[in-house]
Image 1 (cartoon, rainbow, N blue to C red):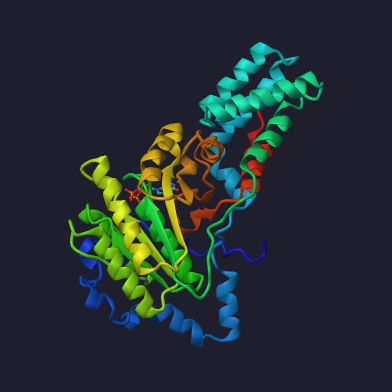
Image 2 (cartoon, rainbow, N blue to C red; image 1 turned 180 degrees about the vertical axis):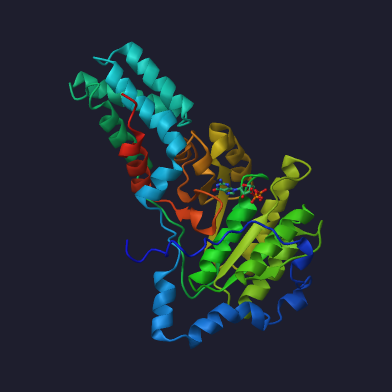
Length: 374
Ligand code: GDP
């Protein structure tokens, strides 16, 4: 598209290279949290106000694209395409008829791509039924599967946003899945999209997590509410909601702990955070998003149960899709967790966190680059 960011513009990365000491000092108590945001952190919005038409247009044209396009998605899915779709296409080339041996091989490919047992069995039953009707041959097997998988994903469900009110986005997930990085990418994105963003560093369990979030916040010029390590996560959220209301924030991003001493601690903490949100901002739409690492495939889905018990989840952010052949897990998430994939991580740059478009995903998976070797 002609309004893409110019290639010579360096991509914005959120790799924390600064020392934690560079992180801004932030209010630790409610009273301080309610103080107006420092001028410096409001600079991007204020500068925008003063910009002329052409400057604004230039900014608009050079904004990173946060919606997945087929080509970018296809490149990021290269490993999944060669380990999954190319094998299916090859299967169609190798067999002269659809029979039980072939179906067994097909099921194996599906399972190895981490679509999960339910989707794999459903797909095989579908192919079998189509075969009885004479509607599937080795030549069109890939097309039949594409149509089936497309149907399984259904409509895309991007992260909703309600203007003129406080929107709360809470990220949950185990350590290492990319939760903090994703929060930083989201903060940066919303900031450049013109929203008024505040971050709550409610993973008080790890000092490093607080510092990492502080660096993201500083880089994006976004306000941050933090307490000391070991503090009460719900108290951070309490302060953050008060501050958000005082400052007219429309998007509050909450980072939460990924691992406490044990499962019941983790659940108790998340439930407490949720209770504070319901009490302090009952009117706010809340998105509780489970961040999952695509490279862990089906194993990652088991984590969902713990978090689902602790808090009502509204969707999934699937990170590191670029580094795995287990991209089939997208289908498993929909089927097994019955949660929409809201966003996907296709790399480490800010613009690599994309809105998930189900149609684009399936188009990209089955697009030409996944052609099997002759
Ligand atoms: P946390 O412990 O869940 O907060 O995880 P971090 O945010 O610290 O991320 C762990 C690692 O995953 C970091 O090196 C990130 O740069 C990396 N990461 C996060 N999202 C993606 C992604 O979509 N693609 C790739 N390749 N790496 C990612």
